[in-house]
Amino acid sequence: MEAIFEFIILVVFEFLLEVAGELMLELGLRSLGETIVSREHRNPLLAGIGYALLGLIGGGLSLLFFPNAFARSEALHGISLLIAPVLTGLAMAGLGWLWEKKGRQRLPIDSFAYGFIFALPMAIVRFLYTS
Image (cartoon, rainbow, N blue to C red):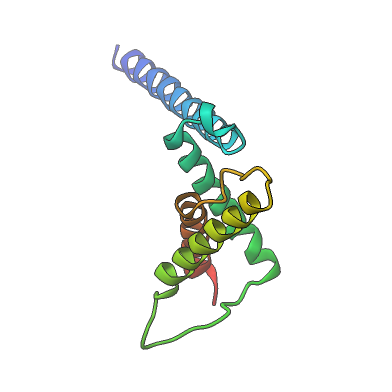
């Protein structure tokens, strides 16, 4: 009887784990889709999650081409986790302003918030995995 109970618990646990994984995958895919939706139809929370996922992916891919840190400082260890995302956010906001000035449509990432949200996970991945 105990073996049947353990089997049922394992089946239920596996089912819950698979459902949780599929829900996370769906959230990730929906979030990535929100990064290209027009401003009027965009869910800001999902778009932010999507840009964070893209930042993680970008950070991982950047390690293939640039496996070493660009700069390391013992005195200011980790400062790039703040400076790089802030500068990236400012650069993206500036780019968005230039696009609007030229009469072109601004992309969602052309804002400080989404630029920062993209750059922070990318900086974290690079900080953790570069030598």
